[in-house]
Length: 148
Image (cartoon, rainbow, N blue to C red; front, top):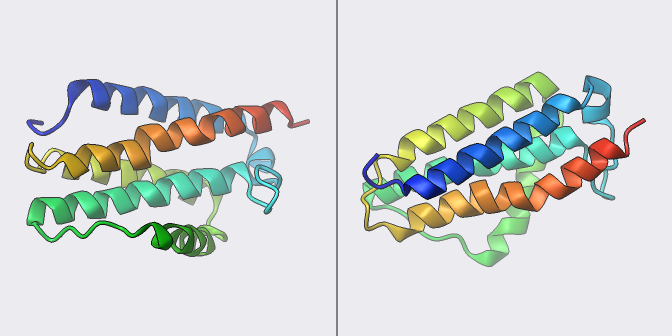
């Protein structure tokens, strides 16, 4: 993986496995119970959210490799969050887990083919991976602790 920063890949891997461990600690009923966010999100919705952004990172990395990448505008992010949540809302917990894992695998595969000078690649890994995991891990832990 010539374009992949070894420290970043190790960090992404460790945090991803932390997300998986926490998600694995929820019972199926707890994972789909609303309350993770006041807007009604469940832990499943949080994983779905993470997974859809991993998929988006895979798309961005493919675009970087092909030379067709156009950076997202900040005003697109909230709309995309809503669209992604709506698209995955009715998916089963098992499907959400599979989608997130597949999206991550695709992202990692695409990352290895991005030219090393493409600094936006590492930014996408941080934005959709490491930083995003860190953003959601504290609430996932707290929500797990709040479960009966």
